[in-house]
Amino acid sequence: MKKFIFLPFVLFFFSLPHFVYAADTLVFDSTDKYLGACQLTNKSEWELVKDVQVTTFQVWYNWNQGETTLPVKVYKDGQPFAEFTATRGNCDPYQQQWCNADFSLNKLLPKGKYTTEIENSRQCLKPGGTGAIRLYENDEKTIKEEPSVKEIATLKPVQETYAPITSCSCKQTTTIIVAAAASAFTSFLVSLFLKKK
Image (cartoon, rainbow, N blue to C red; front, side):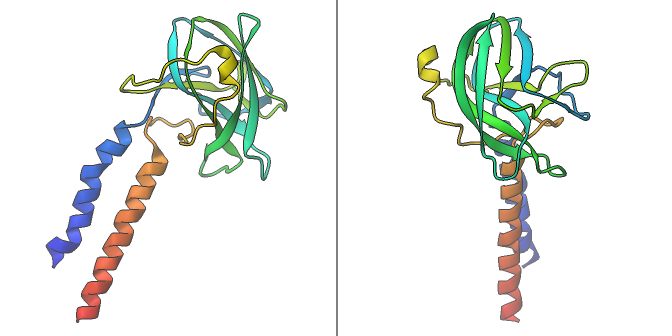
């Protein structure tokens, strides 16, 4: 019976690499993975030194209670480039008001100087730096055909969420869900075993 109860843990650890490495890869962070205290801003200036095929566009934002969407405007070399509404994503486990604002962009961002603007000064600003913008690309490079700039405004918000700034590029939510499922399954098996006695 001990081998049978141990089985869910083995399955959990063998399934983990699939979930951890299936996540999109962080390819640009305007704050160089800054993990300190944030000042607040409504504007970010950043530069891409090469073209980046972006799947997810992310802003690190201090959300008001009940707030779930964030309008974002992007300018490239001073000209309007994109306008969209990002949705509230994963939050800092210790400061629940600090969460990602995610948008599924699926577009090539050419190299150049960019400015991002939001309505309120609630974006994380690295002291002496700029606001926190992160760009992700798919590990498998399977990105749909690029939409035109005009189509970007009509794209749907991202359905998946991504973890806040950490030293790990994995999807922590998926890992937690898998761990919870393994724990629930183990509890179920233990209760069955105890009922038989």
